[in-house]
Image 1: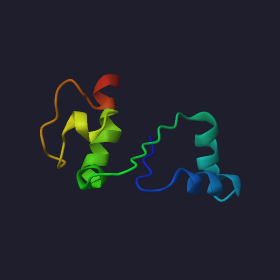
Image 2: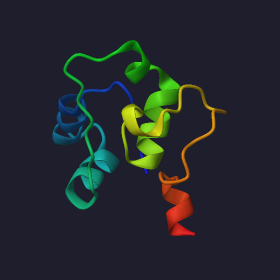
Image 3: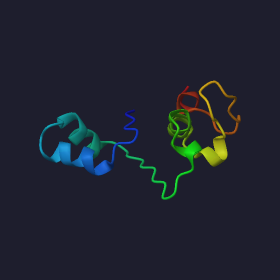
Length: 85
């Protein structure tokens, strides 16, 4: 799993296409890519702990409601590693 927080997808694609990042080229070709785009973000949606929780639960802040890293998380949205275990 790779998180490219606040890096536009086009930057990753350009680096891969130019041969500057072959590992990204392979990830783009073989991996699953999930892109989150927020048109008019609220400050809470861009704070690193919210984006971390969104990435690791697969749902947005409006559902997981994790404001800070140590905040309790609703049980109905487990982290991806809890689902894999």
